[in-house]
Image (cartoon, rainbow, N blue to C red; front, top):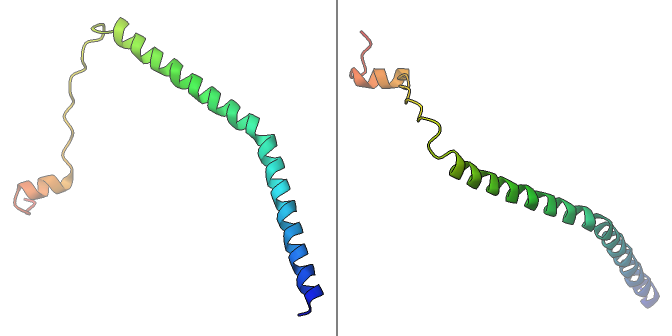
Length: 88
């Protein structure tokens, strides 16, 4: 490879990196307000949700009676193990 060819190779590499960097910077510059807006909206939703849960805990402390616990039906393997592995 001649020195001129090597210089052309380096020039092409540097030009490609500059173009890719510029495109990446432009995309980031365009998308950053959208990202910041989404972060602000999600933060606001989290604050409203926290305030809502705190208010619900204060206002509805004893208003609802606890629901009775329901028995969970046994699955087949528990019955199988209970009777020593025999279905009779």
